[in-house]
Length: 214
Image 1 (cartoon, rainbow, N blue to C red):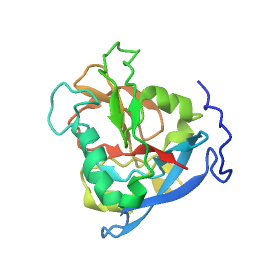
Image 2 (cartoon, rainbow, N blue to C red):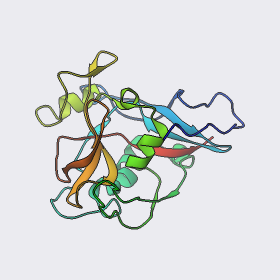
Image 3 (cartoon, one colour):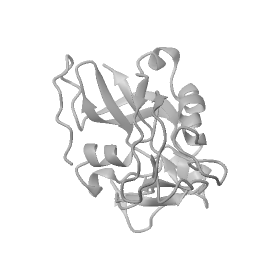
């Protein structure tokens, strides 16, 4: 599946592949906050889909090992709660679109994902990664210096793969893995891991996405 065609927007400076700054979050090794850099994945007439350029946090898909879906996992709760409050002020929050996300089953393993969810911030699904990224090389991402330092010895960072001179990590998707005790991810080489990792695996990174009003 190729990249979704860009729909002409009323603000032509926003286009697929462009970057923008929005919100702020700890970035430096000492925890100093910087403006969050995002990559535009899709543009519609009044809104655009964006994803963080970097892996901005380290967290499990779910804090406890049990069968969960995106609807019930702790990562979803964190993205739409604590992350929102830390990263965005009230004016910025007002630009974030509340969307109804379909949560497709994992077709390879026939794993059911559950009901639709209403989210303002979310992890991409397997289908969305295939839709919005041309290939694996476009999906690789590196943890921020903050993530490297704060989660040293815990967060997975590749010694083999790099992007812009920085070592890459793997990041969670919202889709289920081989069963509901696993969640899918994009690995350090940018390859979709549909089998997934255990939901309580604490070595994975977080790469939030959201729809933003233009």
